[in-house]
Image 1 (cartoon, rainbow, N blue to C red):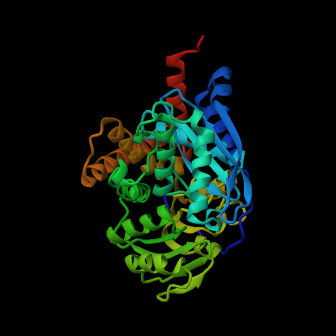
Image 2: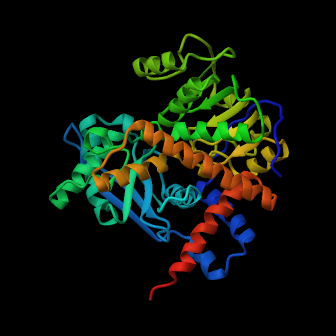
Image 3: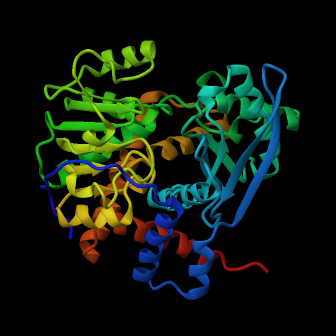
Length: 428
């Protein structure tokens, strides 16, 4: 069932589907293929722990506002839980559950000793001052402190958070302990124990995986055309890495819209422009396009690196890329997967494609625990080796079992977690 390319048509707006329902549907398919026993199926399908917190924050004008936050631990069979913290207005418990479940499979696919977790606060961070954001972060950290630790659950950045937020979390946790605990988070600044190459890890990992797919299928990689939806940390570094690899990045977009140039965009210049002006849509060296138009562009590789549920049953037939490399978590719904498969679009699934971030988070955690730090070249080399190996683990399973790459990745990840659960047994 692993084939190559071809497609055509235009663009409709994606509907808002439940990310958790998508995650459960994907898990059910893998569980059926693995023929999981009923008890194990029930264990792996549900989160192990869920925390909901409501907490006050004093705003700059003296007003007190209440915010809601979450932290979910999905599974601990293979080690401590690992997962980002998201600040966004749309965050809810089901979204956090889905992201935690995907993290469990992702860590197992790249074979690092973690289970999955995720956190979030219902807030638009762009509407807060820096001081308000710090107070919110420190209070949220205090609320979830019983859930996090270097040995038990290690947060990281996600949508709406960054290395500075991780620094505040680490400092708050350390103040409670009475000594510095750098290993309680990853994705923190290098000057307080972060890892060289962590900021770039997810984007670099995406392109290592794309390049390996092209090599595996004996497709020409030089000068391929990419379109990248989302120009935050993941999207911008993916575009930068592709540019450095000699690819043509013909379109990028962010929440305000996008820019398209069939000859290829100057990505270093575009990144400087976004830093100065705040968005890509007014970049002068290209034509303005919408996010939906970007998804329907004729290109070699489409990288959805923004939000969940961007490619749906409503617009999947309009995707004209040879490869969809999922930079975001859950950007493609199960119904859209079926359509892309019918059109011979190769989907490199999120739980494989964007795993570079958690791989280098693992490296950072190890370095923080040992207080022994690696050069960026060493980090990048180790990342590439793991991403290449993981791609072939998934690809070879797909060939052996006649599966698409997403199903093969899920079968591999769920199977490894199931095996660890059986090995550990039940307590008491």
